[in-house]
Image (cartoon, rainbow, N blue to C red; front, side, top):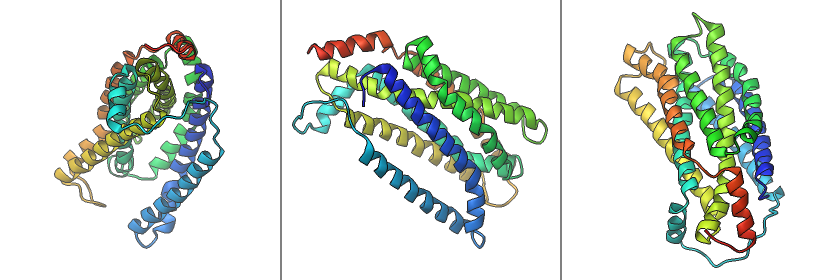
Length: 313
């Protein structure tokens, strides 16, 4: 929609703020909706809510597709093979760092999200705590997403901005291991809000990186493949998601998880660590990876100018 790096930051900030508002609302209403539609069977409740959400999300995507207009005009090209496109992205160092970041992001985020209801139901002992938790993270989510742009203006590097937010997310998440709702509710919910604040900043930053990598890739290889890069980065995120959620399910099954029963100590330990220490460490790893992202604002503007003049890397 634009090649201006600051305008891209604004667009991504707006998208992320809106997403955090929606996520906050969904976190609050999901459990009550499952209970409403699953009065006779929890399985029915989960399925019904999933179908409703799926229909709403699909409609939103169609609306976005119909209303989005591209401002950046690129010449029509012949169909390019996947092999050629893969070779091109392998030469795109900023993109490869973003890809690794997205895989870790998907693994950490969705693995923890899959654990969150288990955590509150069995470790804390009451699933209703999840609703309170969700309410406590709504405002920090929105503010954190909005803070991406001013932090980026200070650092002038989206990767480094994402790295800072990831590091602080990891530290905050590790701190949550030492507190629980029953004994220290104020500290627990405060840390939850702080964690979400930093996560939301990261979530905005990581997606703001991708379009800049497209320009770098065109400058480096002469091939502009926006669609492929977005699709491949999404695939990386989904691979991380699949591994994270499957690993959690596998570990819970291996150590004796039984639904709606009192869980053994090993299962409770897995649930607690999956909510705090494991994602905390992985967030710090993500921060280390993205620290090496060197496509800053100055270099990006030089690349765009060279592209306009027909130069290549």
